[in-house]
Amino acid sequence: MAYSSKAKDFYAGELQGMKDKGIFKEERFIQSPQAASIKVEFPKGAEPKQVLNFCANNYLGLSSHPEVVKAAHEALDSRGYGLSSVRFICGTQDIHNELEIKMSEFLGMEGTCLFPSCMEANAGLFDVVLTPEDAMISDRLVHASIVDGLKLCKAQMFNYKHNSMSHLEEKLQEAQSCRLRMIITDGVFSMDGDIAPLDKICDLADKYDAMVMVDDSHATGFIGKTGRGTHEYHNVMKRVDIITTTFGKGLGGATGGSVSGPKEIAEMCRQRARPYLFSNTMPPAVVAGSLKVLEILSKSTDRRDKLEKNTTYWRAGLTKAGFDLKQGDTPIVPVMLYNAKLAQDIARDLYHEGIYVTGFFFPVVAQGQARIRTQISAGHEMEHLDKALAAFTKIGQKYGILGLKKDEIIAKYGL
Ligand SMILES: *Cc1c(COP(=O)(O)O)cnc(C)c1O
Figure 1: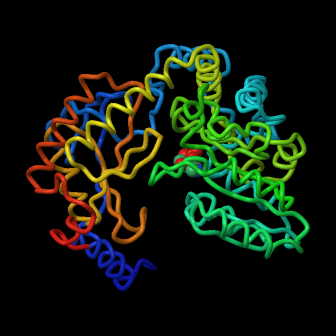
Figure 2: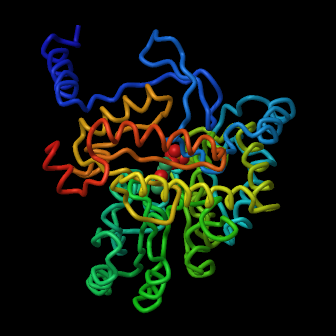
């Protein structure tokens, strides 16, 4: 047998090491649809418990929306369960094409190419549009899927300090001899919930002749006054060249991703992007659900407006209680705890209070930056927010961290 005791002992040791450090991630089993209130089995075998969910990317509360579910049901009947093919062989239905058109309209772009996920959109894009003669200039905190996508591309790599426009400008100058330049950033950064300064980025792109690519996975559907994303928020809707995003978060939360941009770039992805060519197509029910989501969001801004109101209330409540928050303008509200074990312990205690949140720590965030990332949804009602604020306050008191600043929390709990 090739799985030797040497291999087994190595892996077992690694896993035990994670447990000893208190950073082993335990799965919790949800026994209901995804929503603001969910039924969870944790730990395995325990009596299931109804808890309020504050860690889903279900920003618009559409994951289990009856109209979306109905559209998916109808597509199961009319288009079947799976296509058993990649897009270019026989995995493209009329509804895939329709979703590409509707997505382009929603984002204000010329063309769209669907992918099985945004991870795969990012894995495919760069290698298709940039060569060793070109430059990719990325923010240092871009999402892991972009990091991986950049590794798959042979263009010259530059990166700039997070959201630092002076550093970006330096890198653009360094890359002036390259044929094409692309500035690459998240729209909303998922761990801190801060927004890239796309207006300034577009100014620099004009000055130094660079394309702008934005991954708007944590923005599409709700950032900006009609929810088109960070390019709308910063009033640069015609100035961002390429947007990748996911159908797996605010837009219903099933699965799927896209690259939108100039029609040549969408077409290049169709011709050459490896995840498009070699990974299965989005299932029909998900495509139909996504179409319904875009229809709902194009008709009214009620959901993103409610999300904004909920977020303001939540931030104000946690601030008043004395938590140390990352400041920002998005429904990602990180409660900073710095110590990984403290983040885990508080998350566990909150669960027993009926609030489902997760502790984040290295390598998901930098060392010493452990936190509980709370995420607000249009599916939350005022009573949910009030109940969660009361639970956070109770547990914050238990650990004696209310009103403490960064240095004080670190002095008390270490890193
Ligand atoms: C979640 C996320 C992705 C991955 O999206 P999937 O469709 O789940 O693969 C990519 N980029 C960013 C910025 C994300 O937050």
